[in-house]
Length: 328
Image: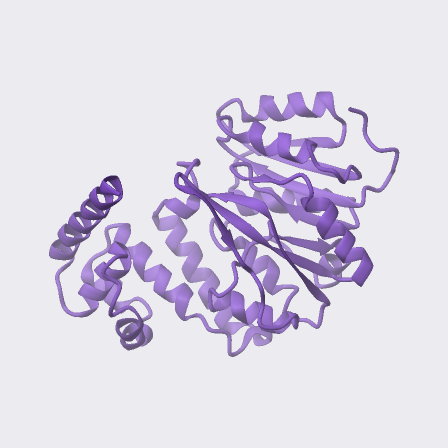
């Protein structure tokens, strides 16, 4: 299929690619299937050691709307920024390589953006699991951009860039970027450069994006390591000191950081002392967290249990939940 005869595509799609050979074709085929055809897709091969880069090159050879960048591995934030540096589209959106989009997604988001002159258009999504697709609403309490940013910090809305079509002029005006060296929540940082300002946001109450939490074993979301935890600490500190974000609710970010420290093998003191100012609130909000092993484990530590005993209980809890699912 030949590229649309347009020097400036209306939509730029950025796909960061790393160890994605098992599922990247599903993602790229879903982009090719879009009913809206005036797009460019920037594939950023982030030093992937498998055949992902070769697969990307193959798609670019068959359709020149695909552009491939091969770079040394620098992490997902670096990959997103490399794509952002060269986009030409009037609007920009991200698609992760382990996910896929329905054929009408770009057309629906772009049409609403143009018809309402919106800076940002956001939509619902599907959470894909082995048990099926779960429709996940992202309806905000209001379309005021600052309110949406606060809902992201409260984890009422998902802080990602893949369900948000954003005007490139808006990105440039507020100098939004993805910070180098961050391996988690880079999307939240990017959005925090834009949403605290008075930008026009529209919400489309339909789901087109399929977020697959299970297929990618290399996902940062599903792993725990020192680099991930240091990224969290840096971002929490940044958000807490950003004047445009004063009053932001960082409780859920701090809570998640505690959980990751526990899962990374941290001691009881490491877990309890990290953001100790939220400990009382944590115990109140998660006092009935028995069916979430990780949250319950942190609660046990905050109640004085040792790390060794808590890890034993955690693994027993995980095993029992697996048995429960198998018996259903």
